[in-house]
Image (cartoon, rainbow, N blue to C red):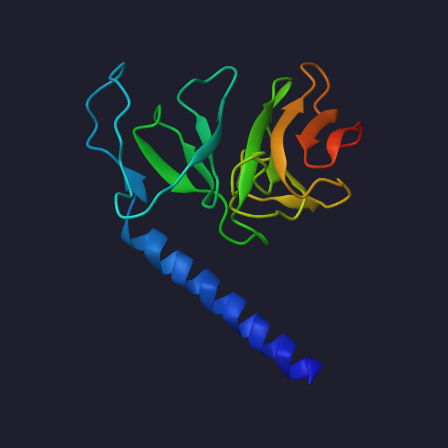
Length: 179
């Protein structure tokens, strides 16, 4: 029955959050490379046993030590030390498939994420659940499902108006003026 299914889903979601918290309590960074110092070249940090694609990077406009990376099937990751180490910012959303991440230049704590990978002519990771926005540097996210595209190639934010967002995806070009 529906009540039992809801209870099972809620229990699974609760357990997922507990497991994530346990893991984050054990290690400072989920992915890192032994720091080689400022200005060093980028190094591959894995994983080495599976393929993965970084679809998009967004660098904070006034603090270049803050970088966000969007994984084709790995969510959003944040670095606060110039990409020497990374922490996940995307553990509890409906999808891990990310097409693009963008920072609002006029409000750098505001991030937009376009979910679903769109790579014409290539077998992509899968569809997404719309656009998400964070107004606190990626600590919390709100879904904006009204976008038509479910496979997003690029998301851009107007340079002076943080609530004007452009999305390019499998449904064409879309614009929002209210986030």
